[in-house]
Length: 123
Image 1 (tube, rainbow, N blue to C red):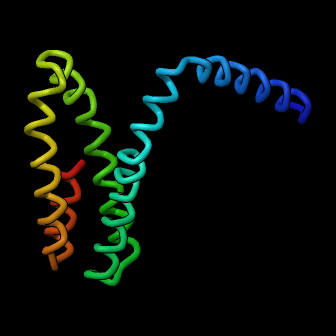
Image 2: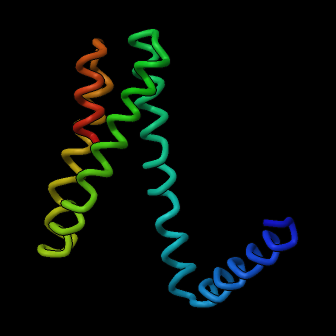
Image 3: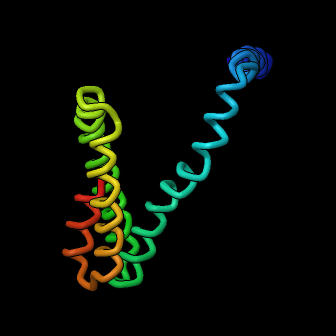
């Protein structure tokens, strides 16, 4: 693939993105979702640095993030199906407090095994 074909493909993709952004609802949704997505993105860093700090092992920290990502990927379909069936209101009322509690619990962990288990459950 030549450089010019890559640029042409990029231009085509950006054109679609620009057309999508023409809708005011898309901008509103993106703006309102940005802080939550930013905060959720920091969870992985928190898990990494907590694990590395407590165990002294970068490999263990990477394994903790891997477990978290694996569990998140495996359960994404299940969470989506539950939200499709019950709507967002009830599952979020249950999942958000549980997730917050697990984050606080993770912060109190001191052993590598407990951090890995909690990281997996967080996923």
